[in-house]
Image 1: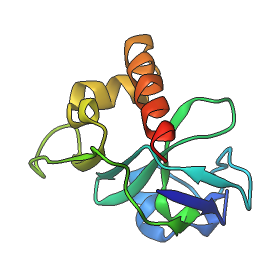
Image 2: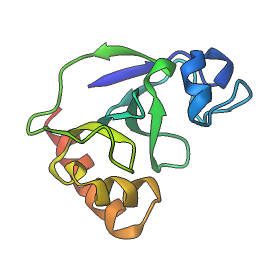
Image 3: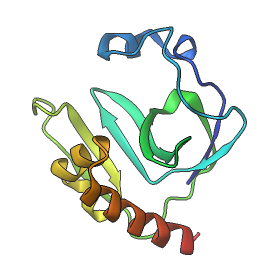
Length: 131
């Protein structure tokens, strides 16, 4: 799946994002007009986000409203997990590579912990090799 960046500031987000910590002044380290590969999709606190590699070459979850889909084909081998909406993690659902179905891996990746980054890079290479 591929998306193109159409916005990189919080003032372009819908108001529902502001109740979870974003602000109109939020800046997202994304290049306008650049196409990004999507390595996961999450529904977090009811908001859709894409796992991309942005500036700094690190995986990061970014609000889907900052992008427009240019290629909707999902990578081969993706999985889906639905989590209890009352779960303390606020993670409602996730689509992506197998390890991403674990809330523990999801959290470790968000925190850029080395073991999760190593798994991500392995899966990223697999996805790119099959694109």
